[in-house]
Image (cartoon, rainbow, N blue to C red; front, top):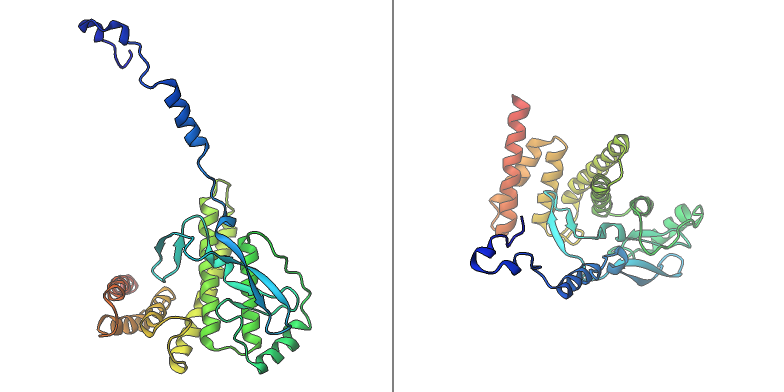
Amino acid sequence: MGLLDGLGFSGLKKLEKANIYEEPAKEKAQDAVKAAPVVKETDFLFDKSYDCPVCGEKIKARTLRAGKARLIRSDMDLRPVYENIEPLKYDPVVCPKCGYSALARYFSTILSNQVKEVKENICQSFQGNIKEQEAYSYEDALYRYKLCLANAIVKKAKASEKAYICLKAGWLLRSYQENLQASQEETDPKKLEELKAQEQEFLQNAMEGFFAARQTESYPMCGMDETTVDYLSAVLAMEHGQLDVASRIISTIITSPSANARMKDRARDVKETILTKMKEKNA
């Protein structure tokens, strides 16, 4: 039956076979579908120039355009998730000549004694196998984070800087897992297990670093205020089984006069999760 069958009863039989849409309208609709733009990762990026503070080389690093990416959500541990792009890939800045590497916020702020350590322990052995690309794979980005961490260890960076590198590397590995799971290709379960193990190792080191930094460093820390660092430390502690520690830290946020309402709401959600985990542990 056609959609207009039965109109003959009203003397409109010739319209029973009528097309609902005129052909030109159909063509326009098809053209509109064909014209839909394909979003590419490179659309979000540009080359930012840096002067390497260790060797003096002028370098360029792929960088996210400000305000270009759309935030979809954030995880409990504050990992931001964006649409069509993973900005975490582009936070490390690496000098392809000497191997000096750091997250973008730290790249230009290196002390003279730290330059000496980097030259002796990184530059002398670095083989210059870093190639600039239009977009980085997860594996490329993870390697760059490892270079950042190696440089941070060598230059005896603050605990907060090393913790921040570990945090972002852990987030990157989680994003990598999600990307593989969302792809249409079959994913090796063993590969996912390996990535999860690496994520947990990085995040555990982030937790330990932030614990140390909270005792010895002033705020802001890695661009975060005290409440944010405390919240992050509590979530990391919870995820690594330190429930009593997590509970104590998160309670200080809930009762803090300086914490904003949004952070207190997040803290209450974490508190509920901690209580649930405690009950499961004691069951």
